[in-house]
Image (tube, rainbow, N blue to C red; front, side, top):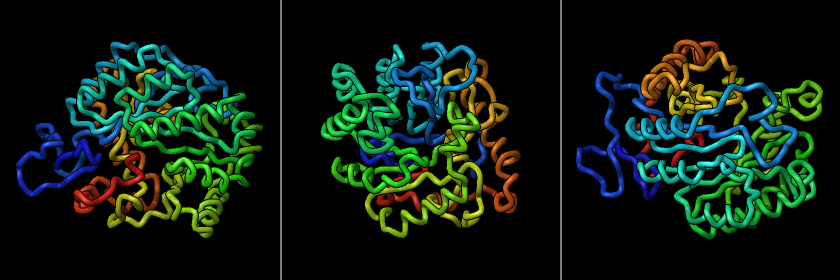
Length: 361
């Protein structure tokens, strides 16, 4: 199996010959043949700091320990590359405010991994120019609504700066997507966000606001956060109006709380809600590590250890074991399924012509 650095796709090959624009992923000695020997993607939280002050920030609103040092972050990056990780998603807080942000980006790029970014997109001109020429490949820009609503939440001028950043990053050849967190205040303007995405020529993904970080406050959550049932109705409404045919996707809340719609062991990558749990891992700004790419939307007791103390390869093994033995079996459908074995089914879908699943983004 190889990963094409040009197409950003996994490719299953029937021989040992190398593809010129790909690198081989070699299993670790002694690793099980029906499990990934490394995560496809790591969500790496660089900082909880941000130059905005959003009332719903998921990364802030609690007491946290000391952040990882730059030396620890670079060590994690080197270990990820040695393991065969395909992509590192930089997140926060706002990752671009980290003092070593561009050095970190350069390190990931030099080691052959895809560099992606979760960001508010509200940059000063100099930072935007540097980002355009950096080795960042994929950018996820947060847009919460039309200009008046977005600026009311994130600050005056943030909407226009984010839109301008989206235009220029896309023009520079970056893959850009809008991320919109859906809550009661913007429920009725989702069509306008779809129209904006079409104007900019980028896809958009709707994500439900969850009661984490600052949105955990009971009064705030009651006023703004949808229940699982309400979110399903929103998804159904969007699908019924044909919006999913316009380069629009939804983050399914059942990935976190409700696996009732999973199609079981024969599910494809787009239907198997366990796929992110067994192909991704998350590292928070303090160095705690979690399965599934989650950082702030999981209980801290689910940490499988700290990158300050334990090599990344060992933490990945712990994460897979934790998910398959402790997390997923709590859900009735998953208890009757062997999530890791579905990897064998998925291999047949990862052909050179197949696009990467949205679960891997």
